[in-house]
Structure formats: C-alpha cells, structure tokens
Image 1 (cartoon, helix red, strand yellow):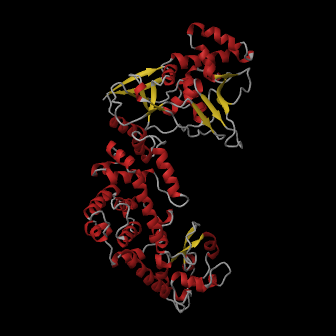
Image 2 (cartoon, rainbow, N blue to C red):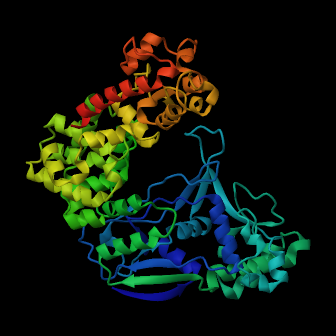
Image 3 (cartoon, rainbow, N blue to C red):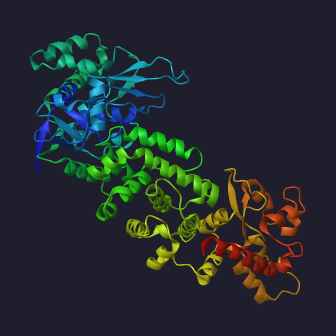
Length: 583
C-alpha cells in the first residue's frame, strides 16, 4: 500500500463525482448531516478555514472480481422540517463500467455530498404537517451578499481560529441558508449560480451583471463575496487529500474503521458491520428489518449481536478475539441467513416461554445468549438439554459473567459446546470455567446483595413481582418491603428491640430479602408507610394477594417489630428458588 498527499479544487472534485469517477464503497453509511452543518461548511470554506483531510482510495490496481460493491454519491438529498437528512439509498454501480482511475472515498462523504447537492445536485424538503405522500419542495443554498463585512474589513479574521463569530453554532460570518425561495433578490444570491463565474476571463463581467440587480448600498460587499466564493470553488486548492493506492480490500476496511473510530458518528458495531455490507449489500436492509421484527417493543437485539454471533458461528478464535469479519464469514452469514434467524427465533421463544425472559429488563447481556443460539443452530434448530440451558442463562445473567473478558469467554464457551457435541452441558461448562461455578456460598452472596441493577434483574428472573405478576412492560421500581426510611427514624424503633438489633436491621433493610418489585405509582404511594398500614390502604393489594405473591404464610407477622423473623423466612424462600434456578 502507498499513500500520498494531494490538493484539489472543489469544483474539480465535484465534476468527478458527477461522472462517477469518485464513488463510495459500500462500507460507507448514509448521508446524515443536517442543514445547519451544510451552511457551516460553506461558511468555513469562505473563511479559508481547513475543512479536515479527505481520505481517498485509488482503485486503479483493485481487483473488482472480489465480492464487494460500490455506490454513486447521492445526487439529491431530502431534509425533514427539522433540518435533518432523511435516509436515501444510493445507486449501486456496475464495477465493469468503472474508470481505471476511479477513487473511492473512505472519509469525507458527508462534506462532499453537502458540496455536491448545493452546487450541482438538488436538496429537497417537506414542510411541517404535510402528509408523508405530499410533494417535496426544492431547496437552494443562498448567500446573503451583505454578510461577511467584518471579514473584508479585517483580513486578519481569516487566521483567528477562536473568533467569536464561529464559536456559536448558529452564528456565522457569512450568512448561508438553505431556502425554498429567494427571500430578497436585492441581496440574496443563489449559490449554484456561481457556476456562471467559472471562467476567469469572463468572471468580472458576470459579477457586474449580478451586481446590477443588487441593492447599491451593499454592492462593494456583494462584489467581494461573489469574487471570494468563485475563488474558493474554482481556484483554490482547499480539498486536502490523503490518497491510498495499491490497497487491498481488507486493508481499506481496516483503515476505514481506524479512521472513523476517532469520530462520533459511527459506533464500533456500525464500523464492523460495515465490513459485512462491503461484501453483502443487502445486509443492512435484511438485518435491520429482521431486528425490528424480533425486538418489537420488548427487546434490544442490535447489529453488534449479529456481528458477534457471526464470528462465533463461522469465525476462528483470532477473529472472535479481534472482532474481524472476513470474506468467508460474510459468505457463510449470507448463505445461512435463514437458518441463523430461525435459530435466533427458537432461542428467543424458548427464553420467553421457559425462562421468563420476556423483555429487555430481564437481560443484562445479550452476548450471553449467543452460545445458546450457537448450540441450537448446530443442532438443526432443535433445542436440546433444556434444563442446562436454563441454568446456563440464569448463571450468566444473575452472576453478571459477561461483564468480564467477553471475547475470551465466547471462545471458551464455543470450544466447550463443540466438544459436547454442540450441546450446552452446565456440568462441562462449570468444570472448565470457574466463573460458572455456583454453590451454597455463592447463593448466600447473591442474597446478601444490596439494592442494585443485579437485585432488580434477579427479582425479575425469579418472578417475585408482588401482586403484579403479569409481565406487562410497565415501569417497575425496586421497593423496600419494609420501608427503607423507617430504619432511619429512632421513633420507629419497636418497643423491646435493642439498639444493637436496630442497627443490625438497618444494615439488612437494603438487601435482596427485603426487596420486591412494584409498579411506579403504587410504589410512590407506599413511600414510608409501615407495611401493615400500607396493606390496609386503598392503594395496596389485599394482604391475601400480597402473601400469595411473595409465598408468605398467613401466620408470618408483617409488623416492623418482627422484621428479623420476616427477613429470615423470605431469605430462606429466595434461597430455595435460587437453588432450583442455579444448581
């Protein structure tokens, strides 16, 4: 691979885009800039500020027989009434018709698309409250020719990177606006008309023609603006490019990921998923549609889950460890997509109907589900060893195992499951992975957890939702059965309870045996009430329903003075349930 630095004129680059000599690799994301970013770009260009380096990939030596795809730049862009770009698909290019000197853009798509649609392409918008099927209005970029006077009065402004005029996100030295129509023809100039000023020999004549329609009081400033705009677009080498050549596809993908990782627009999963799109152009639509249907309003499976699953199903250890998607993995993912989604569906259905994982709130790690899908996929989408699968997922989630060494853990689990004839055997897993070992001591530790995300997850998985057993997706709070605040109030200390015991109870109040799940509003109304008083109120369940939900016998006192007896009983019941789930 070789690299060189070149400088280009804006218009020269845009002409190559119009001829499809500068194109986009399929790893690029959609155009996502907002209108305000487009106008800020033109303001920066007029000021002479650097607009960052562009990263180009010269395809002269590229082998187009590889399974990859390229796209045209968008020739028109639609913005919604809030000024945000709407997703629009680019057209794929037949690699057979590409010029030998074609350039693919690895970084700079947003800036170049903005320049292109403003000068050669077209921007559109939909007015607020218009029906989705309504006609679009054309947008043009306009420049207020009266703006920028400070710039021309003080040439040193161009060197001042800290100038207050460009610090404010909505305040610029040169006033550009994307508008449906010209608000005032005596001072606003349609920027695409700068194309009439391309020829230096006739530029002054053309500028004078424009000035003849402009308000005389701003003529001098307008002339300066028009001359500067023409110079920036046609004359100045302001597109600074690092151009790569003799670059293989995998090298380009790696560079793209590294180059974009420092920005804010792409997540790591987006970057890695882009390597799948580079070889399977339908991947984005297929995967996003599938995930949307899978998630509904319940789950949050995402592209990162699909990437990790593909690595486990078809990758080698080093691929999983480094999160590298190669051509063979993409080929297998594409070929076996139907079976993969079937295995995922079977897994989710099993977890919902047999494990109690019915929504996002019962899942602390989606990665923990991947080994189950791996097992089911390799068993012709049949579920084997159901009890062991349940113990595996309960341990993974309650013990928060996948918060540590995720990739290494997936590698180890893949090996163990494969050696067990693709079955999940909890005995085999715990014999080789210490993290999965559970005994009486470990269960005691779980019951000693203080209120946290882990205790909430545990309660959801155990089904201890007080009287609200239906998993309806409503908001649930972790509630202290005997109110937390009661133990701060010495006036609530029951008669006959020693100060030592009272302090001990204060340390027990925030632990799992004194926690339950309540819907938000009932929990707020319960507040600091004594438990027996709350159960007598109209905002609470009946005492019978309460006892049935928490498996409490009728003779177990719910008085605060008997807190320690209550705590010990509930702890024992929770311990029995955890033994059944985990051992």
